[in-house]
Image 1 (spheres, rainbow, N blue to C red):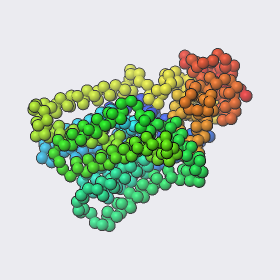
Image 2 (image 1 turned 90 degrees about the vertical axis):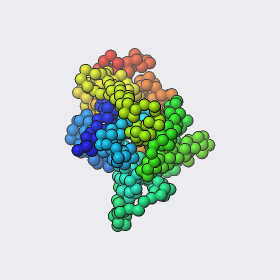
Image 3 (image 1 turned 45 degrees about the horizontal axis):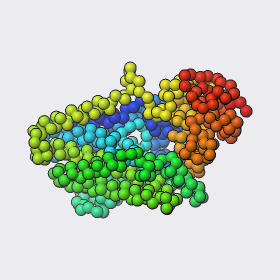
Image 4 (image 1 turned 30 degrees about the vertical axis):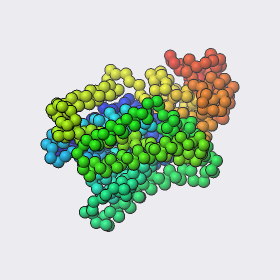
Length: 519
């Protein structure tokens, strides 16, 4: 019963950080894809929804639910299940690494829950490349839950089971699970390992199952670009790394201060690791963290040499070298900080105060953080912008989408403002292109880039994009509409030269207008 209570408390801690209004950042991508996978007639013919999928298992699992329920309900169900899965994995890991069996049951429970709260805080503040774990409903949330469970097995000295769980993570998300499998294997090879009570047959079966799970995720990702010529692959890699996602993939493009905070967090973890009482579980977690940091160093080296190595670097950088350390470092900080705080002897050496008083102060600080973080909960009377609509005027955009949904044909196709990301979610209508909804396979990614520059660029570059196609002139707008089959355009009313548009205006609110594109 105490274990169930701990899991529920940790789930609530994760919910405090993750319960943003629907749709969250990537839900408008993943869940519209899932619904289309479950019901291909929904927004049939949409460019993005009909591109190849790199996370097929997620769509197989969530597709029927997304097709049967409203997307908002699917998102909340997926979120709760995801937070619960993360909590189960985290509690399993924390019990083996934070908790000392000699402590009282109350202190053991406090240590695990405090570690979860510190993890939530550290995840938000110490990443370098923008990786997150606790948030909306998407494939990597479930992948990270399996990774946490795999780490729980790894620190207990059970490699085969750890490999199997990380294989399941790879089935949901090839990058998250693939890097975890690599690091788990490295820990097994580079550190002393205990004898196992499992028979050789069982261990072989677990490893084989992990390989099978991993293949379910890796094979579709690899096959997406089968038969694609080298020039297209190289161009797609450059678009992906330099134009679309440099803030995740190129260290020189990371937000100011992010790398410094990440390095400081790694230093704090190292100091905490020297203070905490040593045991084999913590030693294996430390090895995993060091290996993840080593991967980031390799990624940094590839990033910094990209101006000279070109396509080779971009092809390698697509694999998110910084992703594992972005999670491993805050996880290690949380585990070792909670271990230090919960150990009376260590805590007394660190601070000249009663350990119980220190833990009370830490609890109050963590509760204050959770209270502040939970202000974005979509409770009655609160007005919070969904993060998927952060690039538009959220209220006016939702209003214009409601009109589009109720007053246009289901086969209509729209040119939308460059910051828009939720037209399909809110209206069930096709869209020519969206900056947020970028495909995964090389051919579609090159086509996406062409659509983006056709719709928003005067020069063919992504460095000078306009907010609306209408800004490029009515003749250009009609040319683009004819090329991609657009029947309507939604234009921000403060866009330059909006008064020069002579197309029929069907509807407008305070910020946006809908025009019909007449050939």
